[in-house]
Amino acid sequence: MTSADMVLFRKSRGLFWGALVAVVIGLPVVIVSILVVPSALGMYSAATQAEVGTATKVIVDGVGFLTIFGAIVAILLGATAGSVDHQRGVIRDLVLAGRPRWRIVLGRLLAASAWLIIAVAVCIALLVVLAITMAPVDGDMDWGEIGRTVAALGPWLLTALVFGSGIAMLIGTRGPAIGIYLAFVFILDQILVVIPKIGPVWEHMSYFLAQGQTIEWISGTGGTGFAHSNTVALLVLIAWGVIPFTLGVIRLSNRDL
Amino acid sequence: MAELAIQLDGLTKRFGSRTAVDGVTLNVPHGSVYGLVGPNGAGKTTLMRTMLGFTHASSGTSTVLGKSMPHNRASIYPRIGVIIEEPRFYPFLTGMENLQQIIAARPESISDDQVAKALAAVDMTARADDRVKTYSLGMRQRLGIARALLHDPEVLILDEPSNGLDPPGIRDMRLLLRSLADGGRTVFVSSHLLAEIELMCDHVAVLKDGKIIADGAVEELMRPSTDDGAAPVGLRVTVGVHDPALAKVKLDAIDGVTDVAMGLEPYTVLVTLAPGSGDEQIAGINAHLVGAGVGVHRLEPAAASLEQRFMEIIDGGGVG
Image (cartoon, rainbow over all chains, first blue to last red):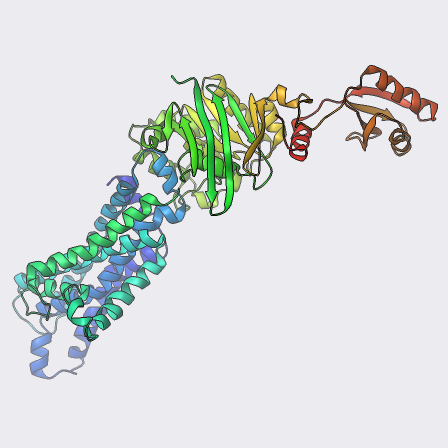
């Protein structure tokens, strides 16, 4: 990765920065509001309030929201990394400069990862500050639980990032890659699991089940119904990133300039 | 150093049943400016893309700087400068930032001086820090040339480099490319601007329907040919008269005159004589017009331009 890779993302506009700002600033505010305002308005019973109202609980639930919204940003970043040079028509000039296509995409992907980590770190920092300031119920902070929850986000978001870049390389453009990811993870994958005959086979390779198992393994919560061990779940999740990325690189490398 | 900068041997590119480039054989000497001309759809861009290995050739070979393409493209690409079709950039970056993207991808370092020199060569220094989305087509073209020149390439391959340039820009481009060739660089350029090709190039090839139908030194190509397969072309004479319309009517009736057209200048007609004609026929024109009461104030041979020869070659099917 070079500073040029980082600049390419920093100078981008529109959807990219809109999504990043929404996650970094908008999401913590919205999450804390959702979790704190009902308590402040007395909408919860005392027992519920005690259960959901501590700062630790607000942070952990807030990080949970990031599995959806953070993944969308990860897909957007990954798809941008996989398609920006091709879509802008500059990939030919980069190849002429002497850089192999897989290295061009890898550089962009590392820069996208850096931006994703920065965005998630800022989001979580803001979430922590807001939760500690506004949590309606006092309680000791459980930093271990918070750390495990944040760590569980890592494989999930990075897989989404790499998956997104692979799809974008395969189809050569960013927009549809985001739609394909959302449709696959939240609709197709879950339908395939419940279809008779296909489901019993698919559940061994389900992206959604594998990521659920991985998150719950790392965060220390229960199982999800994935058919294999935690290690296999992690490998399946990695495969869902690596396979589309590899196919994308092959497609990109064989595409006419 | 290989004797030829670019050597194509039977290069062919087919798209399904359509043959876009058909058995092209070309030799581009080192240090020359080699022009490629042809009507729209002749296959000029496809020829350049195939030659460079941007797309796989259906058959034939392409050798650039002594190495076969596309097998050696990783070692050849950093030694050449290329613009194929309209140069593309990241519109949200400045011109300088776009160049830095390329510099970061290059194996060797490019000094600030080299960047400044490339920008100055295309008169883009003042606008280098503006975003590319604010550039005109001509400015993007200039920046594309600067990008191709960054690393002082041995060979420049340029597809319509004058696109979008204003007349001073076209002249500057011609002088720049000529000076690069004079400094030992090789320039392979396609263009629709035949007058520019005529002024700039040492050699020229005419492409039609994917085939080379004429090629050679510019002076040779502009000389009317009597070879088999060539369009036979006779002498052209510009005749200055007081009444061009009447002169045309009178000249059309003379044996040995194959064509009479209104001249580009006022009060002139352009007369084309049958192949083999000479001074005697020219004197006959004068006598005939004067005898018919048409005042003649000027009579001189008209030099054939590359554009005229191009049209003759394209219409006639080629030069052997």
